[in-house]
Amino acid sequence: MNIIFIGDIVGKSGRKAAKKGIDLVCKKNQVDFVIANGENVSHGRGLLEKHYDELMDYGIDVITLGNHFDNKAEIKRYITQVDNIIRPLNIIRPYPGVGSLVFKVNHLKVRVTNLLGSAFINEEVNNPYLSIKDVIDNEEPADIHIVDFHAESTSEKQCLAYALDGLVSAVLGTHTHVQTNDGKILEKHTAFISDVGMCGSYNSVIGFEKDSVINKIIFGKNGRFEIDENDDLLFNAVLLKFDEESNFCKDIITIKEVFANEEEKN
Image 1 (cartoon, rainbow, N blue to C red):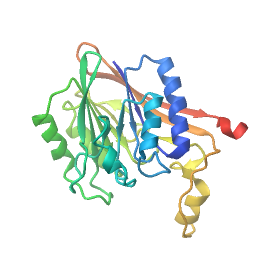
Image 2 (cartoon, rainbow, N blue to C red; image 1 turned 180 degrees about the vertical axis):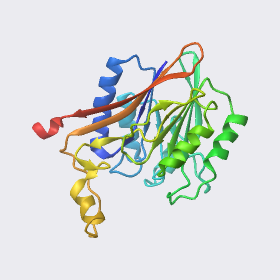
Image 3 (cartoon, rainbow, N blue to C red; image 1 turned 90 degrees about the vertical axis):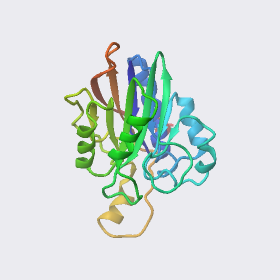
């Protein structure tokens, strides 16, 4: 079985990059299941229903979220009306939706779980390890278990991956939007990468127009982060290849594609 996990989709540019990337990767590989992090889909923060529908049209099967899960108020209404959006499992405040779901893919059960990190994240959360261990011990078992660990700290991501080695199929870091070079299979067959990366504007700072971020971070000016919708497009993802007999992940392949923005040329 081949599963694609797509890094944080940032704004309109990210949606365009995701569509192009999915078309390309699915043609090159026999992809059975597509997961994407969608917490930045709508103007860089949150997920509007119309953009959820757009991603479904691209062929995405499951959307995970992150610390911006609540940035678009309408998601509280529609998250319980769909069966493939997964918000962070370990948030403390009451919130609709669920943090872990099982999907039937071909003849296998695939569980997808979304976790928030506890370091440098403003949202108050329960311990990520204890939260997912409760799912592993008490919820419906699955043949493959993919964890989107949306966290700031690289060391926290590494620690959780090693703690879960052999208990889940993959621990995939999201949130920092910069694809890391540490994708590997751990000793007990769990796939890991610190950050899958992002889909969005290529010449940007984590998906946002670079000057709008530079003016705030470097020069201390007030202003909102913008998205350059005319820039080239970056597509980051990982391809997970699973052995058909053991269901172990046998390979994790990082994907980086840059596409010309066709609208810019028109």
